Length: 193
Image 1 (cartoon, rainbow, N blue to C red):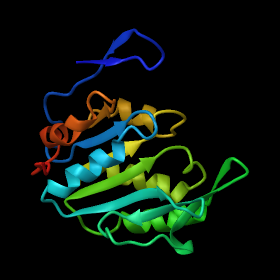
Image 2 (tube, rainbow, N blue to C red; image 1 turned 45 degrees about the vertical axis):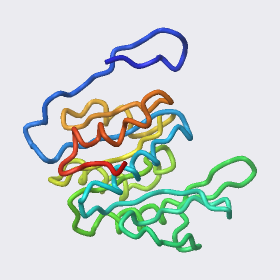
Image 3 (tube, rainbow, N blue to C red; image 1 turned 90 degrees about the vertical axis):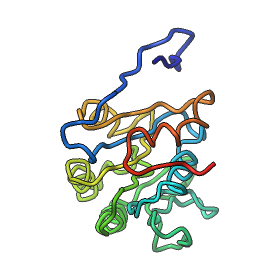
């Protein structure tokens, strides 16, 4: 299984896991790839048909130039000042570590059959409690479906090194097939057509 090297025309081998880890049913799957390629869309398409009770969070940029952390299990969640975890000002993004710690940890507390972590990147750098909670979730019994920033991520190298984690690169060529591929790795899933 090959993927295009984002830096040129060379091809690199992708690590593919054909068997579940020894903790069957607790596999962690993360999507990575260029910005706006369809990673979160693939996650939402999978969730729409997976038949699982899921928890966790989505991060979404709002029209107010703030990044909001919304509970994945609440599709009607509204972006408010209370859900903001970062803001854009003068072409820079400033994270609010206390908001990540509070909202992120809170979103990961509810019982679920699958936890969604969309998206992990670099803004969580100073959110120590949130980063610890992410580690606990990854080590726990509940499967995780996440999105991880491809460039500058605090999390990507550690995720790629985990034996219980598969990192899939989303491209223009494979993005429509990703929800069905997630069904091979995650429990009880079947994407909606």
